[in-house]
Image (cartoon, rainbow, N blue to C red; front, side, top):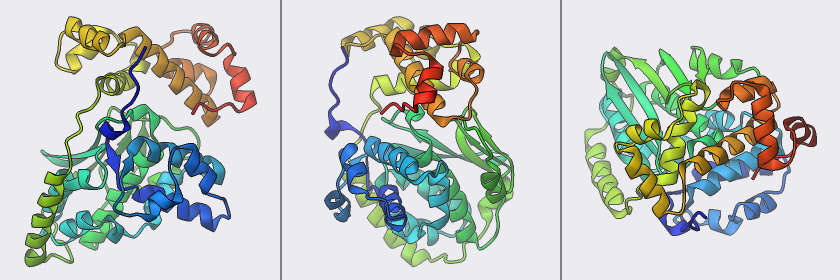
Length: 345
């Protein structure tokens, strides 16, 4: 049996995206209070901008808000309308930097001030790759937050430089069905889903692009404040189960999910991984099957994936094998869940 979650040890967020979703609900005339209560949040908690909440609850709220609004592109849509100044310190330390490359290094260092679960990394090679990593939060549980962050960061790059920067590539680890044309039109390039990483890639020469509001004096002050804010945040190591899940998810369609492969990705032997999992009351097979079940429920609720594609995404060679496994997990056939509109919490 898995140990109970200690919410105080989970990565937290300042809940800015949650507030944006609640405002969207209000404009649509949809009561937010029941949705917030269902995920362990409240309007009073959101009214206190100094209070942080578990990042998992933000992800859960975004899913429920998207369903209530009938907006499967909620994260992307919110990324197009939010005021970047709401990011507070993070925005001003980026905006006052001298170049885009410098601003991107700032987001990589200080993004945890806003959301500890999302870790930006910037790789400078022939191109500039801005990658979004997850810490202590299951990647497979999220779509809207990831899309908000990647598209919001692209929009921010354009605002800071005063130019319509077009990424070379934009990719997401999760899968999507349906028409994603609006996302591609915004990006200026085809958006890839089911990729190995969540990232966007800019041309090498963009790192030297000057920012329209560069201010070295303000930047020095902001750096001091950001360092102070960063040092005040307790470090949250990624729980082992989440690390294992996040390593498994992108490998599922390729049929390469074995304990030895995941252990190698996590920098340990298979024996050590199994021992560490056992210490937490877990085992590799249970984690794999639970992850497959959770993803199956998500893909079925999406409505756009054929059952044969879902079987492939989960690493099953035959639809019959997937159907058999799904009935063992839930007592229902995949078609029954889809017709009933059942969605896992």
